[in-house]
Length: 121
Image (cartoon, rainbow, N blue to C red):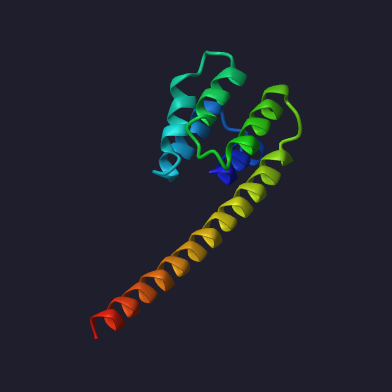
């Protein structure tokens, strides 16, 4: 969704409500985040972004919070791309950790099954 945000802001220069609607429509996983932003328009943007970032998984909050501060200050839009890269990297690391946990659980279950079979024999 950060790609949609970047394209809407930089390439197309769409109004913020349209960008937020497009982001919300693109993904069910992040829809609550974008919906909160869309419904909260009119409130101060930094506070609104912080509240919406609280809906994100804790692993991604630091990057989203710094992006919100940057967007509020009107800083460089390329920070959206940098944030996207960091979020992708963090998501990849979480997937790798989950695969490792799954392998460990499989090995433990297999060992327990073999041990049970040995005891029963």
